[in-house]
Image (cartoon, rainbow, N blue to C red; front, top):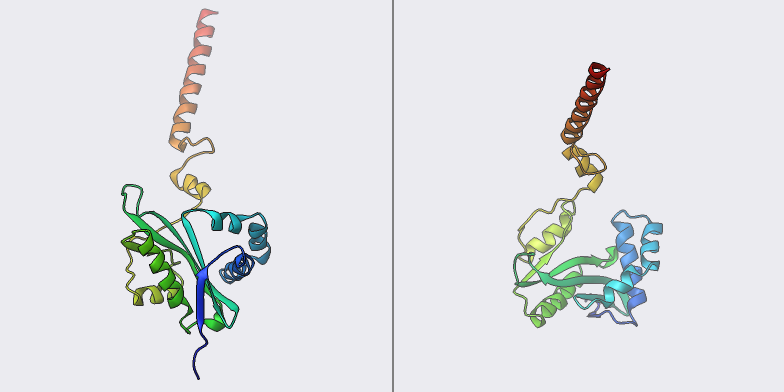
Length: 194
């Protein structure tokens, strides 16, 4: 039995609804609640991203049914270099279409996009816990270049020992001690004068 033909094209206004439905499925599969994902889509996050000049989105279909998408963006590899790089922000294939060549076809479209932009490198963002995705990219020659770690501002502030104003606990303690000493000196001076 032969595989159904896979068609990949850039997301246009005609495919935006199908793309959004796939994007919602990918968010829910990633553990985001359906309500939160739907709210993000209804607030225009997807439509805004698709209209950005530096973003390119592709949708894959088999037998007229949307089965996957890729979203890539062009930017320098790092803020200290001028070399442009295409970064794959998201690559998603519906579960029943996986291992049928859909992701490879989407990657072919991203590669052609990188060539058209004059990029020598393609990067990707892959969650560390997604073994299959990491294996897929490794088989295509992607190597681990950096480890991107993320935390919330509040958690980092706690770890750094800062209060809400951004001052460290030590700075706050020293400030309080100086204030108490100044008050003590002022009150001792007024007692001696009286």
